[in-house]
Image 1: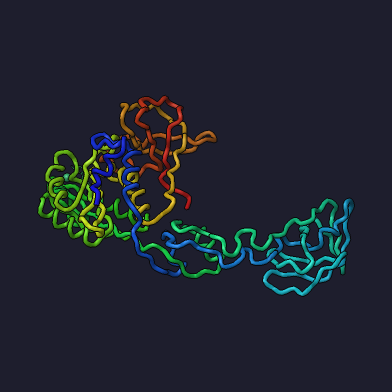
Image 2: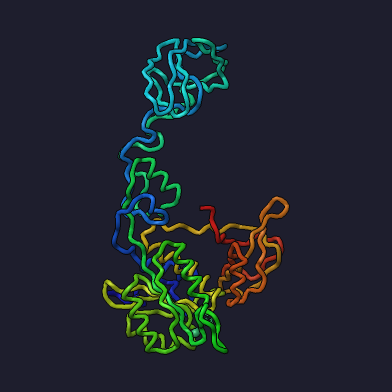
Amino acid sequence: MTSLAQQFQAHADYQPDALAVDAGRRLIVEALSPILGTEHIPLRDALGRVLADSVISPIDVPPHDNSAMDGYGLRGADLAADGPTRLELVGTALAGQPCAARVGPGQAVRIMTGARLPAGVDTVVMQEAAQADAGSVTLAPGQRAGHNVRRAGEDLKAGQVALAAGRLIRPAELGLIASLGIGEVAVRRRLRVAFFSTGDEVATPGGGACDGQIYDSNRYTLCGMLTRLGCDAIDIGVVRDDPDALETTLREAASVADVVITSGGVSVGDADFTRAMMARLGEVLFWKIAMKPGRPLAFGRLGRDDRAAWMFGLPGNPVAAMVSFYQFVQPALLKLAGVDPLPATPLLQVPCATALRKPAGRTEFLRGVLYPEGGQWRVRTTGAQGSGILSSMADANCFIVLGPQQTAVAAGEPVSVQVLDGLV
Ligand code: AMP
Ligand code: MG
């Protein structure tokens, strides 16, 4: 197996001590391949899962020519070139009910939305343009042949790929698969992700904290972020700053999971013993990312064979841990989970309410609030931006992303924004 370091060194933009955010994300994603293992599950349970096989439509959708309107079905050739058209009524076609009527020249049927077109019908005129009396209907001038009908297979043809393997199943995909009459789907198995916190000062909420301790928040944000991504989140707890305890826990985590995520213990001071210990377990690289918050990041694998687990060591500061997760770990987990193509995170350009400053050379992820004002959207920061101020994440609905070249933003100037919550 080629070492990760060798693999990365081939890239011109691989600078472990000042790695650009985009380069780091690309290197990580390229190093990973989707996990194997699929399962067949009922469609109802498939929300948030990833299709393992393409869904091929077994039927035409819609399955038959049908009416798009409530109105009258007729032969387009019967429509008068100018003036009204009067036709004899020979029956009614209701959705889901057989209609034996055959519509000949000069004839029409009353027809409802979704009803199969009776023989002879190629056009529907909506009822608002029609005047019916006993036995006949008069259509207003200006109706068009072929209108208001939905053709069999116009959405999907039998044998066509309805959804390609790799698609993440959202409510629309659930509905689309259901519309094909399919009740069970092949999905990738869930990714197993084990995570733990490190630090003598870190105490678990609910248990009380000694003097000098702080409560663990990273395990809670991680559990939330992993659950949102559809992973099996395996909480391993808090590990003391002790090499033996760390090694035992890492081995245990790697044996049960595809991915191990730690937080804390990767800053310059701590990295020394961690580095030596991880080198024994596999291969872990320690990077300084040119970003704020979230400079230190460890990435690698624990174990040396095909069953090795991937590892991410996130910074301990709560905001840095979250920002690093969203920028590096999330795309990596999606790739491992088999999502293909990987979704691009939209960067919107939004006027910034206040002036901003930063040094050149690093990417900054400010926590922001998008809000409407005077008919357009604006963005402001949440206030204090320290990498430990978790309320800045809780108050935010977006990241303001300032690129490495940017140094000053004037009030009213557009900035790049990543929205945190989506509609679906
Ligand atoms: P470290 O990277 O271990 O040096 O930690 C950096 C900062 O993050 C320190 O102030 C830690 O106390 C804090 N920190 C580390 N882990 C956690 C955690 N799980 N929850 C909250 N804060 C943490
Ligand atoms: Mg620590």
